[in-house]
Amino acid sequence: MIGTYLRILTLATLCLSVAYLPSNAGIVTSLDDVEFWVGSGANRTALVLDWDGEISTDESLVWGYRWDGAASGEDMFRDILAADARLFTKISASGPTGIAVYGLGYDKNDDCEFAIDDGTIFGMDGIYVSSPTDLGTSVDPNDLYTEGWYLGFWHVGTAATNPYDGGSWVNSFLGIGSVNLANNAWTSLAYTTDTFSTTAFAENPYSAEAPGLAADFDTDDDVDGADFLAWQSGFGILSGATRSQGDADCNGLIDEIDQQIWEQSFGLASASSGLRSAALVVPELSTSAYALMAIVYFFFTSRLTLRRVV
Ligand SMILES: [Ca+2]
Ligand SMILES: [Ca+2]
Ligand SMILES: [Ca+2]
Ligand SMILES: [Ca+2]
Image (tube, rainbow, N blue to C red; front, side, top):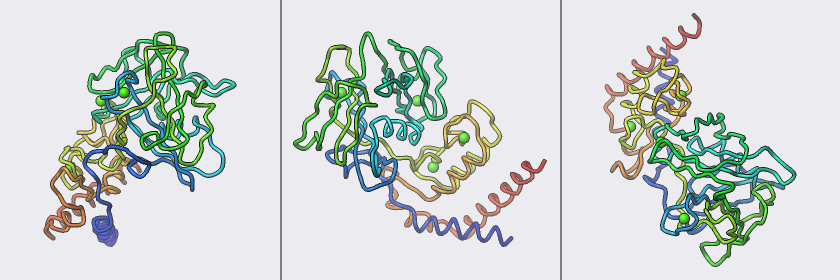
């Protein structure tokens, strides 16, 4: 039982140390507004994706990227793809100037369900290497997907300083692989059906939502014992699992990895839930509730151990 008590202590520590999460990704007016950061290092830059570069009223999405030394736009692009399970792309194989981006998709409703109508099977990093392609669409109408090469394209732009506060976008002329990242610079990918456009740039930027509530299986804007029970019910599903069944990492199966994500985010709450902070909310659970959760957890992790052995 010592292990169980250590687990309780770990959970209690998590309750007291977790960060307060915003409910919705907010408007971006500077790098300081970006909520989803990838990489580490002294330099900062941003990638902005705009699924309709011909209108300014739709929202574009922003990811931040940190690095040291030299890095290309393609380095940033691939690292962000790998870090955000909601993001998908069709790209060319690498050429002399790096990759061409043919298609970009985003699981906008964050239900772990993303597909396009040509049956493309994306890799675990969200990438599919393709020949030039046009007209693919998202199967889920609530997600984002646009692709093109002959009938439209993802135009690459760069800005040396914040384009939403005095800086200016300029045409990159080449693909994202040719972009050399610079501290405080920005990179835009904006889809346009004007295949000769050099002026389509990302507008109306909002931050991509940072991961954190991936284990909120019952979608009530927190990660708590109810979410654990949802995972427990779904445990063992080997394919086609949904987030509501306990698939935190959106890989279609429900296993210990999803439980670990739940554990790491236990106690998180979003502002929209009406909970002021995880540190205030979770300790309000009674001692008996903690004990019950710990008992359930102990027996179930024991069961997991047995499954591994046999
Ligand atoms: Ca737009
Ligand atoms: Ca979806
Ligand atoms: Ca929840
Ligand atoms: Ca999973």
